[in-house]
Image 1 (cartoon, rainbow, N blue to C red):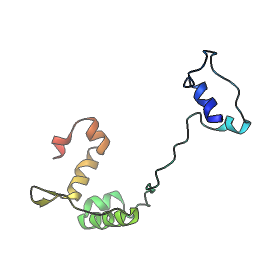
Image 2: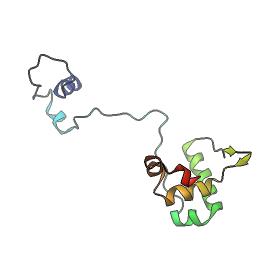
Image 3: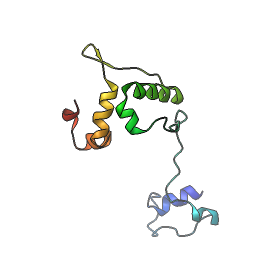
Image 4: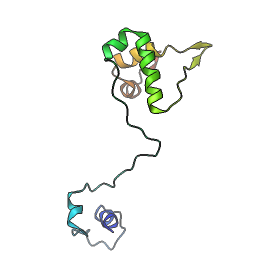
Amino acid sequence: MVEQERTEEAGGGGGSGSGGKLAMASSSAANQSPLPKKEAPSNYHLYPPALAKYEDVVACPKLFMATLEKLHAAMGTKFMIPIIGGKDLDLHRLFVEVTSRGGIEKIIRERRWKEVT
């Protein structure tokens, strides 16, 4: 019932044009966010704590690969090295190139993939 009233308050109730409700069904709902709570998918896992410092991982490809394999094991995901042009992709180099330019989101937003590759 509270969720329905929140929807109506936000204009999603398609109601009678009364200007929206101000009353809530319970006082405990007043302290909650007006946005609906999103539940994590059943396959969602929090990232484990870092196993090495960024500077150390950048400096040592073997440490990078070891921590990447441990991350995949902790997350329950399959670890695979992509093959591009018949060669294994150098994941360490890709990591260094991407992180040194501000990360994946920045590279995508600024369309800098040619620079990375």
